[in-house]
Length: 63
Image 1: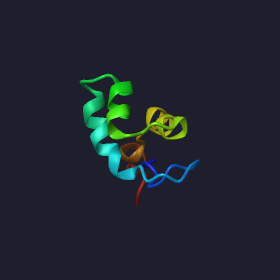
Image 2 (image 1 turned 60 degrees about the vertical axis):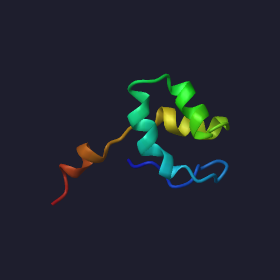
Image 3 (image 1 turned 135 degrees about the horizontal axis):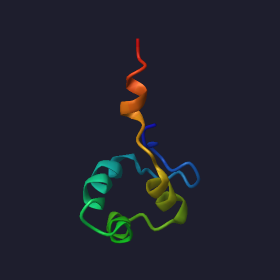
Image 4 (image 1 turned 180 degrees about the vertical axis):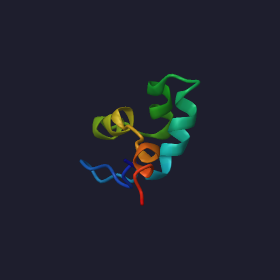
């Protein structure tokens, strides 16, 4: 639902990079953005590329 604070595989802190990645991904190639953010490991890269933000959809069901 929300991006994890740390990578689940290697433990590298990645949560603070999500907003910048999301903004820059619209205009630039995701590979270049990930390289510039310092996400070199494939586990961290896959975390960012496969993440689906469901916060808006889930918040509809809050009582």
